[in-house]
Length: 200
Image (cartoon, rainbow, N blue to C red; front, side):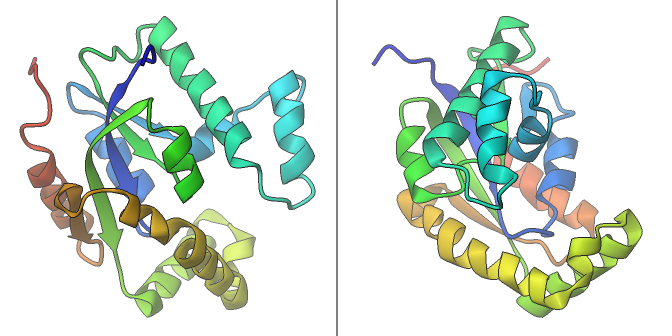
């Protein structure tokens, strides 16, 4: 195959379900590294060739092609490997936000060995309440409009939810995200026990 494969846990769920919070907590533990794709894309330099290519889509409100998204992500991961911030033989990747389409699953098949898919699940009306609350707290003006929120959820249901069907059912762990964050973390930790070869 010739490609470096990253041992990975996928954090999965609709916007506002708590992926970022839980991924950041899990990433503090030995052997785990949390990588949020949104942070990668926001951190692209607008002066770089790949940053300009990415912005040519995002600035027009167009969907960034899956091939470009995966290329940006793989470049970032290789940078972490080069800096020894991610050691493939030692670390398990907590991937937050990618793959988010079935096409991305196929493009990443040679790069990710998916050990678990943690699907954070929450009822839609509760999710809308949560996103509205977060919008006020974090000044995210786009999430104060319920129509915008419903559109984001609809896009998730249409484009991202089918990703779950690309993985064997026995690798998918469904987590009730409508609990206190500590209880969500407990369920995630339970699902991840035994996934690392080395403990320090």
